[in-house]
Image (cartoon, rainbow, N blue to C red; front, side, top):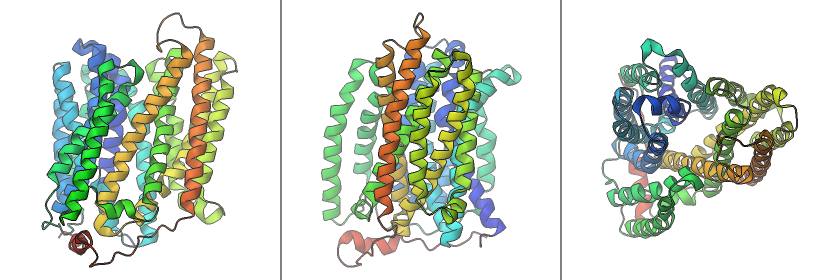
Length: 494
């Protein structure tokens, strides 16, 4: 059983998960207010959102491996401290340039904080049944973070607390971060693997390769042409990274991307499924926001509230996963993805209804989509953790979170580009007939339904693979010989 102290420690790390989810979305709704207040250009406002995502995605693996080496609690708390400080700087930024720099640093500190969460959950909860319960709560928190980020930004800006306008959107992290730091002593200390050196060369190559890939995907066809030079650059750097990692393994070092984690039964298929799932989700968030505001003409505050059913549905389904698993004789993730696909096809049909009736129908649609998404995330995350030994939990968590960011960027690029192509104009451009907006949303919904169907098929194939780590021969390779050193033997801090 998980005691009161352990649960309080789990809620501490889950609060950090909440913050990282919120800050991935919260500035989107607040962007017009930020642009007006700081007299910023549209490109600068785009970078306010992108800087966080790029830094977060680029440094996740490094953060995860640093947690394995220096201790998950230590790196987690340093990440929280940095995130709290950079949130304060963001909230006080007097100009767009400082805000962009602070958002990049905020994403970087989040990358050191976020990968430790699943590793700390695994270290805190040894019982498989109780760990599944804890991961279910993790899924609920993700849902609440999404809803708070999308809807909360509009609400906080609309409240205009103390006349601060958009600034509370970022300053709200400061009291939460301080509370997490105060409760940090409740987390398991674990045992750091200080005998292995951090792969600094691999970290440097990753820090170049991932932003080069993510930036053009985030900005999509609307970005400057030279951003697309990042794609061939990322291919070259990724090739160099693969060669460097193989050489490090041959030399008996500890690579940033341990091959044994990639070789774990079902791991590559799990990561591909994660990418497909989150590409579908991010594509839906984007085109839904486009259609609500530029098609149906809803104000940002009302459009933000339209995402409330999504977060509620996601949280309910995440919390009910274990209950559903015991009562339904079918894999829940497959049902969840199939539900999302069916709901998206229903969303395409809604575009044929009367314009004034569509908001209510779309609110039902997005709530059902949230239910479907909530059936998938928790078991998928739990399955990834169960495929590796405890020593590799940090690396697996970092890989999964990095692939999540790649999926999010890919979904935005593909779904957003397809929406704009069918629309034949930039969303928000004056003079575009409503019927064109409806056609664009219908086309995007069908595309995303296909993506959800593919994700369901990937989950079906994944379900046929046992979710248990392969036994590791302890003397076969230098890499395997290092594994026992990294295995955490947790103890509670006094």
